[in-house]
Structures are given as structure tokens and as C-alpha cells.
Amino acid sequence: MMLPKKLFYAVEAVLFIAYNSGHGPISGRDIATRQGLPPRYLEQLMQKLVRSGILRGVRGPHGGYLLARERRRITVGDICEALNEDKDDPYMKGYGGTPLGGKIVLPVWETAQRQTMEYLKQVNLAELCEKALLQSIRKEAVDKMDFAI
Image 1 (cartoon, rainbow, N blue to C red):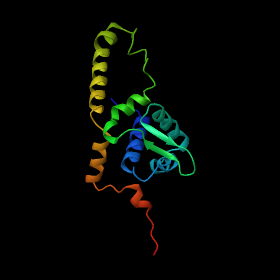
Image 2: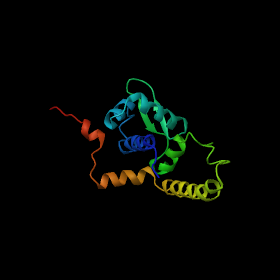
Image 3: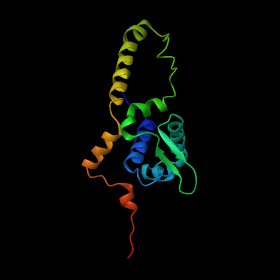
Image 4: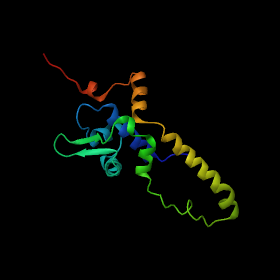
């Protein structure tokens, strides 16, 4: 089962914010540039994350996004739920296809989705940030530092 690309980009963007937090808001444009995405595309995802309480938007010349909760209190599953536009997908509720699809395939599909979501609900941003540190991934703030003496 492939997860949507938009979900991958959203998780990466939120992790980027979590990993680089502590230095003020991070602009959506900076994140989009790093991900190689059009800023308007990423902005739509970020607004859904703001509305769901995962991110907090900050306006102004030094604005951007911050986490709305502690890193350990945001899971990858939370991000998935925030972006799930198909909550009332007709295939999941009242499937009207063949008996093979409804009685055999659909339960397998629902079980796979439920187990995937259970796993993603166990992975929080604090754990992912720790993995990034262990792999010596540089923080954005370090990359932007420029000192002159």
C-alpha cells in the first residue's frame, strides 16, 4: 500500500519544523524550496495542519510556522488524520460492489489501513528528531549561520 506523496511532504515539512525549532518560525517558502515543491502546493498542506492544531502560523516579515504542541505529542498518525480528505470514502462505508470485494477484499483493506494507522500513531516527532540527530543530519539554523569578525 502506497501512502500519498502529499502525506510524505507534509510529514517531512512538520519534521523539518520540529527538528529546527527553537530559532523562531520557519517560513513555508524555505521549506518548499528545500523540498523542491511549489510554495502554493505546500501552503495548502500547511494550512490544513494549522487548522488541525499541529502547526501554528505566525504572520509578518519573520513569520512562518511553529509546532502547536510539543514534539512528543505529535505523531505521524496525527498528520495523516489532518490531511485525510476522504473520511467519508464510499468504499470504506457502505461498499456497494461485488460480494468478493465487500466481504473478502474490503476487510483485508480495512485491517491493513487500521494497522498502518496504529503504527503511525506510535511514531512521534521527538523520536524522528532523535533519529535525525543520531544520523548527524545538520539543522537548518546551523546551515544559515554566518559570522563575521
